[in-house]
Length: 132
Image: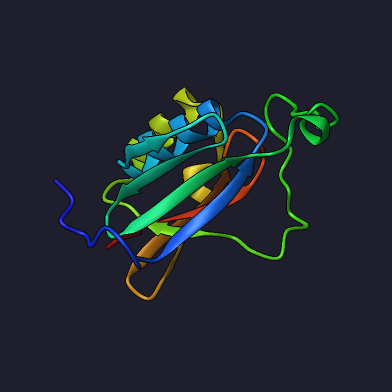
């Protein structure tokens, strides 16, 4: 059970065409729990941080096309980075939930971590780091 304080912890808000699909990705890859679920959003918590998956307004979402596999949204100015216990477990979770992870030989090592980039099911670039 996560012993993090209920308010004021670090977090990320991700806007989604499909709240359910994107939430499943972050729950499974990061081991988060769904603490709050509404039509407009889901609050996910674990490992000392929150991820809020927030619905894009329907009028805008109808115009967004998500390719399979998703195209990387590399033009974004931000890339969230998460420390995970096992990159191979993340790979399985990413594949099971519609995301994408670079091949293992594309990983690099920095500051005591093996680092690998991928994306969530909507193409948002995400970085995963496993301690050496």
